[in-house]
Image (cartoon, rainbow, N blue to C red; front, side, top):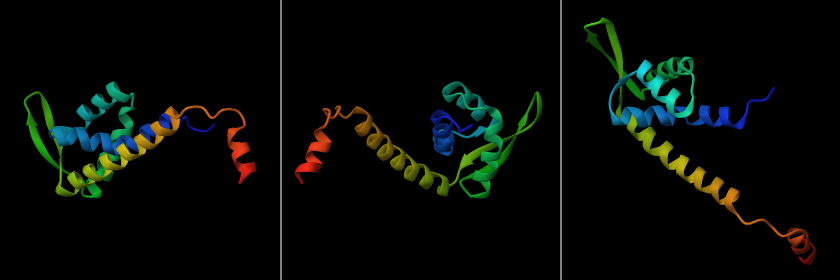
Length: 121
């Protein structure tokens, strides 16, 4: 069964969302997952592989913070490459969203107008 458009859109913007969250401040994976779960209903299990991939790609780096109530937490922060990726992906997202909005919000073509124009040319 094919994935719904909603699932595909979420997967497509997940990296952008994580970059944007980390641009606001360093965070740990569970906190990022919780925020995304609340905002766009993205499952927690999706975040951990993404965070590893983003680290491998040099978009984020990690550091440990001691926790008084348990084990140390691995925090993520943007690298310079991550900031550049955020700027590029934000620009791409906005251009894409404008293009989709223009198509979705365009007035309906009166019945036959397109066919008639094609016949006249």
